[in-house]
Length: 380
Image 1 (cartoon, helix red, strand yellow):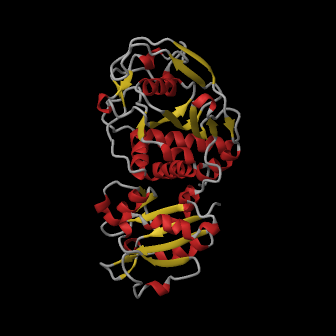
Image 2 (image 1 turned 135 degrees about the horizontal axis):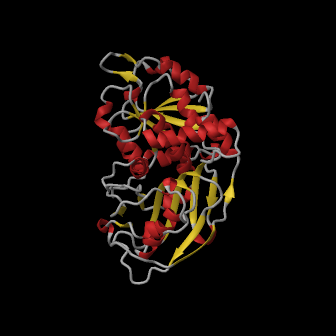
Image 3 (image 1 turned 45 degrees about the vertical axis):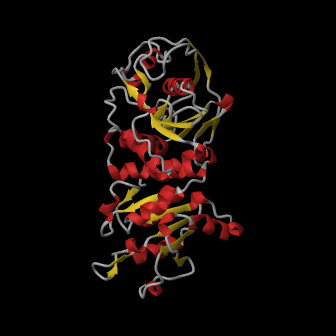
C-alpha cells in the first residue's frame, strides 16, 4: 500500500448543524492510521475545542489563512521533502466551495464527501464518496504502486492502458475484475464508476507526463450525439476539473453514426476508414490546439484505430504532443497508425486519408493485474 495524505476540511468532520462529529468519522480516522494514511485538517481558523479528541501522531491541524488559494500546498511538500512526500500522494477531502477552490488551484485530487452538510454547493466537482464508514476502503482505490498495465512511447506515439481488459487465458479473479469494469462502463453506476475514476486519477497523478497536458478530450462513441453525456465524457470531466482546464466542449465531433467495432462481424476491423469518415475536430477548438499537448481518453485499446485517427486530427491541427489513455487493453493487436493528411481540414468531415500502420510496441506490467484483482475482483 502506498502512502497517502488525506487533507480534510473541517466541514467534512464536524457538523455545525448538529454540533457533533459526523457519524463514523472518528472511527474512520483511527482506521486510516494503520493504513499508512496521514490525516491533515486544514482550516483558515485555529483549532476548535473538538480537535483534541481525534488528534494523534498521524492527525494534525494546520491553520492556513486563505487555504482556498492552494498556495500553501507547495510549502507543505517542501516541508516534507526529507520524507519524500509527492504531490500525487495528497488528496483533498471536501464539501464546500473553499475545498473545491483549494483542490483546483493546487491541481490536487478532490474527493466530494457526500455525507457532509452543504455538499450540494460543490455541484458535481470532485469524485463522490458515499460514507465515512468506507473511508479506509477509499485508500485501496487510491493505491497507485503500479499505475499502468501497458505503456508505449515509441516514436512519440504515447499510449497508456490502465487495465488488462482481456478475459481469454486469464485466471478467474482477473476475468471477474475485467468483466466488472466493462459493467461499470456500460451501466455507469456512480458508486462503482467513482472507484474506477479514483484508480484512473491516482495513476494519472503518479505519472509526470500528464502534468504537461493543456487540453483534455474523449473519443466519441459510435453513436455519439456530441452532447457530453457519454460515460467517457464523465471520466474526461474529472480529469479536466482536477487539472483546472476550462475548455469543456467535446474535442471531437461524431458527425455520422458508425458501427461499433465490437459488434462488427467480418470485415477488416483494422481499417480506419469508418473513423476517418465519421469523426473530425470540434470547430470550437480552432486555433486552440496549435502548440499544445493534448490528452485523449477512450474506453478500450484493441486495434488502435481510434487513437490513431484522433492523433492524426490533432497533429494536423498543430498539436505539439498527443497522449492517449485507455481504461483497458484487449489482446496484443494494437497498431500505430500514421496518416497522410494532405489538404484536409481536421475541423471538417474527411472522406479519405492514406495511412500506414505497424504493430504497437510497449511494456506490459503484469503486477498491475494484482492491483486490478485487489480493487475490482471478487469480494472487492
